[in-house]
Each structure stands twice: as structure tokens, then as C-alpha cells.
Amino acid sequence: MNKVVLVTGASSGIGEAVARKFAENGFAVILAARSEDKLAALAESLKPVTEVYAARLDVSDSNSIDVFFDSLPDAFQHIDVLVNNAGLALGLEPAHEAHLDDWETMVQTNIMGLLRVTRRVLPGMVERKTGHVINIGSTAGNWPYPGGNAYGATKAFVQQFSRGLRADLRGKPIRVSNIEPGMCETNFSNVRFKWDTEKASQVYQGTQPLSAQDIAETVFWVNSMPPHVNVNTLELMPVCQTWGP
Ligand code: NJP
Image 1 (spheres, helix red, strand yellow):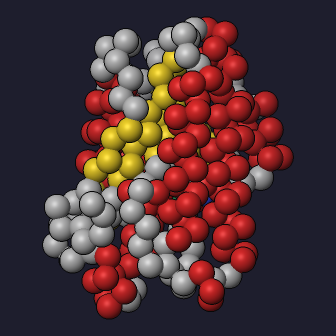
Image 2 (tube, protein in one colour; image 1 turned 180 degrees about the vertical axis):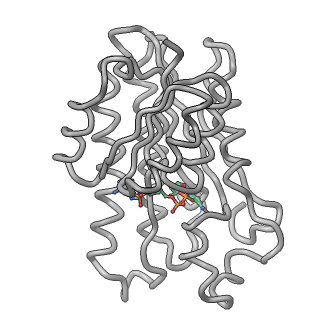
């Protein structure tokens, strides 16, 4: 059996592009997200290329996590690469107008979801003495922008958790990387910025954003480095992004 990659949030955008990239390069892929119809379509398109398993996973729901991992077919149990990509950003209001429900959903998805999945996958990696956890963070975790406060804080958590994982795994041949995209054209950015040109122009000048493929190439490259090389943190921004360093 080929190496196995699990991609959460594989139904669109960066996750879909990452799954395609690994599939085209000989990995067996596990596709996970809530949108089963989109996963099924992606799985169909990848089946001629590689072994695929697709199943519903809501990372914000611990029951869904249990069902998903308890149902993994034997051939997909040995996860070599985990790409913790599922995530979302809700609301663009300043903190004094923000909706607590939005904050709760972001915490449950971007923080608790990533923790739940990692906790299920990591023991197997430790036992097999091999593995790579690749977390998809955000430039927003480093460079807060107006209205992105709580979202950025969840991604700052992802960065700090990645650092902590490296400490926990010290001496073990398991890699942990944190990839931090800036503005990337996906459903995420369409929903978040394109509906309001004025707000979009505050954070993004409207020339060329990153593409999901740009991130997929980066994630694949990070994993393709020799096993003794750990890319800790990698931040990518489109040249036109107006917020940041
Ligand atoms: O966005 P989108 P991206 N359980 O909306 C899934 C980060 N990022 O590809 O469940 C399981 O196309 C959702 O699937 P579904 C961002 O924070 C992006 O841009 O079917 N899955 C979908 O597949 C995120 O961590 C930008 O709705 C859940 C996927 O997540 C990652 O990149 C900038 C889920 C989201 O795909 C991918 O986002 C940046 C749940 N509860 C960081 N909730 C950017 N695009 O500009 C959502 O700095 N998903």
C-alpha cells in the first residue's frame, strides 16, 4: 500500500487541491469534510489515479470524529501525513459587535477540531515511528486585521500548538509543520471579502491572490523534504496583500 494522507476539509479550496496533489504523486488519500456530495465527486475523479477513501467528518463534533475514525478501512489506518486543513472564518465585525455564536463555531472548528483529529491520528504515528502533521494556519495568526480578531486568534493557537507538538515529539521521527497562507482565492475568501468591495479593499488590493494550487504545491514540497528536515513554519502571501509585515 502506498503512503496515506488524510486531508480534512477536502471538499473544496485548499484541501481539495492538496488531496489532488498528493493523489497525483502516488499517495493513497483519505478525504474528509461535511459535504458528502462534493467528497464523492472528488473521490470519483481521483479513483483512476490512486486509492481513495472518502467519508463525512464534522471536526467540530466529537461523535462525528469517533464515527469517522472507527470506520476507517484497514488499508487506510496507517496515516503517514495528516493535513489539518478544515477551518473557517465567520463575521467581519469588530469585537464589540461580534456574535458569540460565530466565535464558538470558529473555536470548535479551528481549534477543537484540529485537536480532536490530531489526538486520534498521533498515537499511530508515534507507534509506527513515522509521520508528518501539517497544520494549515493563517497569516491572520501573526498579523491581525480589523474584524479578523477571533479568527486570527484561533490561527495563533494553531501556530502555538504546532510548536508545542514539536516539543512533545522531541526525539521522535515525526515532523510537524505549520503553513500560513495569506489571501487565497477559495470559497473562504469569496464569502469573506468579495461580497463587500470596500471591506475587501481594506485587506487586499484586488490584484492576484494566492491560488489553492499555490498552497498545495507548498504543502507537498514541505512533506517532500528529506525525513530529517522539518519545515517548522512557512508563511505565504500574495504580493498585493496590504496587511502583514
Ligand atoms: O476555504 P474553503 P479554504 N468539519 O471554504 C471544511 C485557511 N486559510 O480552502 O465541511 C469538517 O474552500 C469545508 O468543508 P465542508 C482556512 O482557515 C484560508 O480557503 O464540506 N470540515 C471545506 O472543505 C482553512 O483552515 C485563507 O463545508 C469543515 C474547508 O473546510 C484552510 O485555509 C487564508 C468544517 C474550507 O474550504 C482552508 O480554507 C488563510 C467542519 N466543521 C487561511 N468546517 C484564504 N482562503 O484566504 C469547514 O490565511 N470545513
